[in-house]
Amino acid sequence: MEAVTDFFKEVGLSFIPLFVALDALGVLPIILALTKDDAPAQRLKTLRYATLTAFALGLGFLALGKALFSVLGIASADFLIGGGTILLVLSIKDIITGKLMEVGVGDHMLGVVPIGTPLITGPATLTTLLVLVGQYGIPVVVLAFVLNLVVAWLIFSQANRIAQFLGAGGLRATAKIASLLLAAIAVKMIRQGIMETWFT
Image (cartoon, rainbow, N blue to C red; front, side):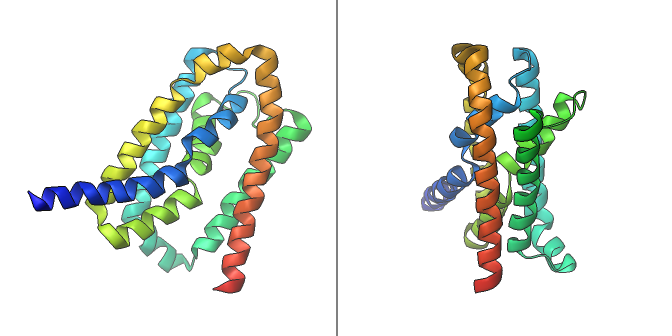
């Protein structure tokens, strides 16, 4: 009985940092901006792709992350800079052209990049997963990660209601603000990567 209690205590301790790293509430306005032109059914479909992508990437990273990083000589700082650069390029394109991705790219592609990764499961989440595995082990961290994705999906599933509440004008305004936030998140990721490179 004590072992079960300890297991769920560790799940709780793993859940909290992952919840902060995923930041589903913070990502939601950006998702609304990215899907502002989508019909409600298409938006939910995109979010399903995004959640599945985040799940697959997280599990794959848990299984192969350390080994892959070691073989390729990649540090977590490199991952932060790479992910941040992708987000920065996409956000600048959206600010200048009003289009994050090309028309016809498909909701599955938008769900994969940039929503599934690096917005939902990005460098912060992946690094947190690796750190937690070292502390609590894979079963605990996988369960905590899955629970976080369930919570994220419950939050994202309200996207259509929020979009309806904001209306077309509100979504356009949100899109512009979200593009700036996306650029700021990208710069933060790049800055963190550079700081880690210089001071470690």
